[in-house]
Length: 615
Image (cartoon, rainbow, N blue to C red; front, side, top):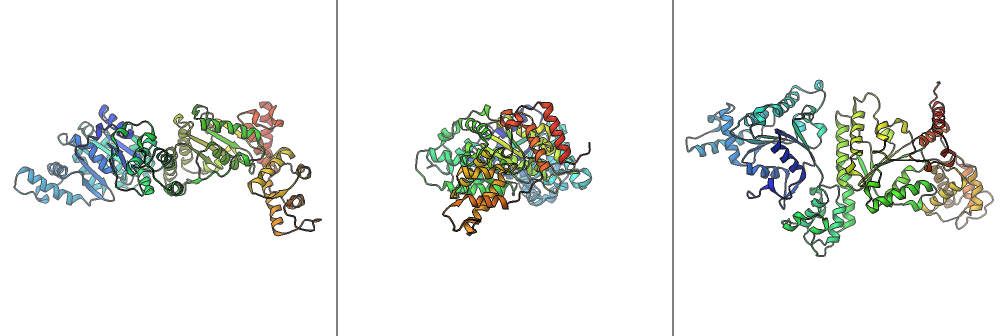
């Protein structure tokens, strides 16, 4: 491995290329690596652990490479590095030759022996208060350039309010900050690398310092996954390889390794290093891999990786089972067409579905995802009780979303999900700011589609709702006519596979009197009628159980069902939906001709009535 020149490898990961170039062309000597830092690294046609990759990367520069892990201790990349470090630490007065057991032999052998003693002496040292001064003694020596790698840096210098941190934590943060500014460190050809899974866990004194380079290690992209799959499964044919490349999106290489139950790896073919398409790295040999089982296991891995912060769902229905809502379905089908055709510039960055509860927002969102052919995840409660936990959870989720690539992200009840209430110490503002930054990243257009659902858009951050983040805002209302309610009822009968004989001429008069019933109410009605049918409870006037569900069952269910809703609040939610709509064509006819002044007056009146305001 010593012959591998990683700094000049043609397939050096982009994140390491960025770090290398900034180090060479600026005076930045301290870097924070965050994100996918515990994964394997594919470079120079080989697979490396992160530690082995860094050791080999610095090998051509002949730096002393020393690692510090607060859970493991201190170790050196090579024995000769320990010998050189021993000489520096003895000259700095931190150790004596007698303590390290130097013997009066040749100079080289003497320091080699002391290097071995040094390794034994500090190998198990975990206390930052002891280790950091020793690392500093190495960093200030211009004649012995070194690279210091601190693993789990967030445990060495954790973030938090100064008053809540212990003296050791504050001192460690100050030491790391001072290293980034100290000319003796920066100009001595030295390098400090701080590794942490989430940036929010590390002291902001360090991460917010412009002299510190912050580099995110992303989850492996499509080509990287393809090359790795080709390496561990060299018999994959292009079609199966491309399928597996797509299925494994959002996973680490380690996780892909576990999924594939890999055999001993072989070197990636040299010609694949310059491949520009994922299919190009696979050979043409047949193989049989359980694609469905891999997809199911991936779902489990992602949900476990995000510790319940997301749920991966399978969209099991499309617009064929969505009744009514023709303008909404037409608008979303147009977007789905752009997604499938690859017209990324015409795909909205995000879509907001707004309207009263029970109007079918969630059902339509999943149907849209199915029409697009994209996987779906729902964002669950990511708030944590500890300082910094919420921001760390959000970063973990966003990292997975970005790694998954082509995906629909559903945020239900967004007004509650994105708000932690009063007295949150500024967490809400930081969460919203980070989410806005992510949603407005134009590199995500056409790949990541956010669908945000709410019945109280007035509680959402105004800037979050602007075009460029939520380009399309679709209002949802209760069915306006008996015909619309009939279309929904027919769709519900198909969805639940109910065998029914309910002619239009019989059912329309029943539906005429159901003004204000939500889609959820209509679903409750048909399920109540079907439950009576299956239980053999005959409606009045019916003497024998029919072969299929008939109109009398539905009529009795309508008379029996009691919808629970707050009319004033529902009306207010309807006016909010009207005010948020991005196009008049999406509104019911009775709202389309309203002027902006009329809309504002009606919204204000509905708000006063719903919220019981006196003014």
